Length: 197
Image (cartoon, rainbow, N blue to C red; front, side):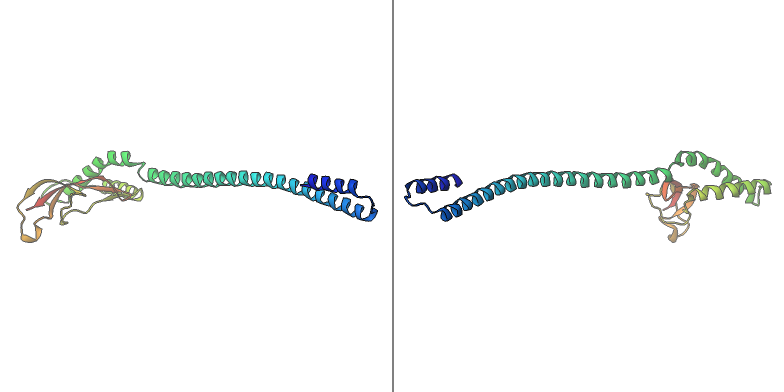
């Protein structure tokens, strides 16, 4: 565009018989201004193109960073949750191995409490039993209460059914053969029970 205007002006200059220096200076100055403005606009356009490309790259990197940050936060939460779950049932195998010992203590205590036997549950043994029970309960072990409760297959395992002594005991647990236990509110052993029918 600038070149066309320059060509037109130079033809007019050649064709004109009378030269007007002031007008010619103004025209040359105007043409230079137009040429400078075109050069500046081209430079701005190229810079704007670079800026838009940089802006686009910046937005892409920012998006990637935000996604990675969100993934890392999710990973931390998931790891923390898994660790807490693992810690809550980490002692499951140990507790399960100790349960038969507790059963033996319970049977010995029950037998010693029976008036028809001469068995004695000595004070020292009772202290050991109470201490063991309290330590295990502090670690999250809890015995199920089952006698007299309604039979629930999610918590109880029925070994046998016997006639209920009265109508109120139908469908309820009459006797517990083996106690059930929870470890931090998760069942580690189902109660083995006798149900009334």
